[in-house]
Amino acid sequence: AQSVTQPDIHITVSEGASLELRCNYSYGATPYLFWYVQSPGQGLQLLLKYFSGDTLVQGIKGFEAEFKRSQSSFNLRKPSVHWSDAAEYFCAVGTPNSGNTPLVFGKGTRLSVIA
Amino acid sequence: DGGITQSPKYLFRKEGQNVTLSCEQNLNHDAMYWYRQDPGQGLRLIYYSQIVNDFQKGDIAEGYSVSREKKESFPLTVTSAQKNPTAFYLCASSSRGQGTYEQYFGPGTRLTVT
Image 1 (cartoon, rainbow over the protein chains, first blue to last red):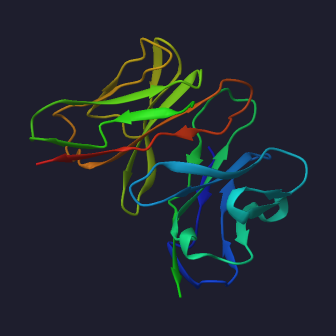
Image 2: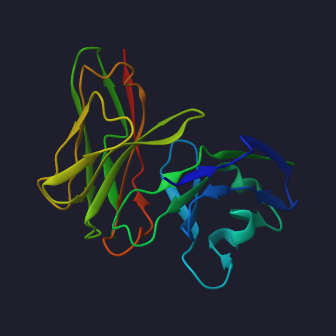
């Protein structure tokens, strides 16, 4: 069965600094990969997704992520963080050719942004 | 606008009472899901349904029940058998097809049981 690890429970960055959130997955082949963001008390919003092809994917709000097969990773990056990016971020993995089986989510990384 | 509606936003119940959380979608998605979220626990899958009149247990189904009589609706009942029901509940949906496509989430319902 697939699994997702987000090693960092909480990260604090200064506004304007760069950001990288780590995500590692366990799956025997190339999975589908997703990053979601959740503001307090809200639902999850999809930031970006990777199915195949170019390993660097662009998402909304200036985020990007890079799929690295050799490292089983799909890290999320942003060159310059804004205070509004403070939220919880979830990485998720899905399995190709398995019908609509549920995504498997990591436990999340909480991002705090300081002035 | 297409989307997922969860109502109510906040729900309060006394211990020992069953309570039903509503989830409706107008995205024409075949699959729907219920997750529970507790601080530091991420999202835990309660039940999911890939098609009308069919559903499967997730990782933490004990104390919960669901029905899927219509494509648009997937209500979740939190029964009195659920030992710790206070949590944030999220409903999601996705389109059916080969592989697992992205899930779209509703705004959530915060349930407090005292």
